Image (cartoon, rainbow, N blue to C red; front, side, top):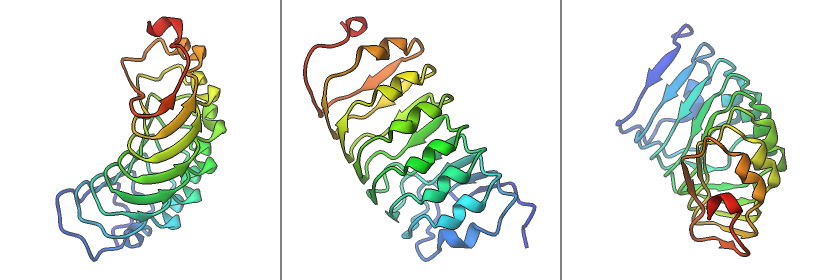
Length: 193
């Protein structure tokens, strides 16, 4: 049933009683849009078995739980966002660094905790990273500086501390950088002054 479906957009519906598990059998699915669909569920680990997924956009739902480790199995995934779901929590799994095609990653306005995985330097296609309005902490990982295609970077509204490394001067494509409401100290790198 619907096994050849490659694109689905469920945005703007009232799917409160639908589990995302129901979509895991759609093994040909490449694009999964469900913005403002009123999902009241968690992201199941079976999502990581949908190995053709390139886009997962679940913004503005009421998702709970953590990001499954299985997301790292999605080797074609280029866009992933669960922004503005408010209730997702836990750390950013380091297995996400295995999703090597990832270019956009957004988890803003949730309750994620912990640090940015140091393996993020493996995500060389990353150009948009949005982690704002969570409870993330730790220092600015120098591994982020290896993301030379970074164009939009937002870690505002967290609890990051320490200094901002000068290596971000390597971000020659950056056009927006938000680091507001953190605990950074020291001087700004020369290219920012």
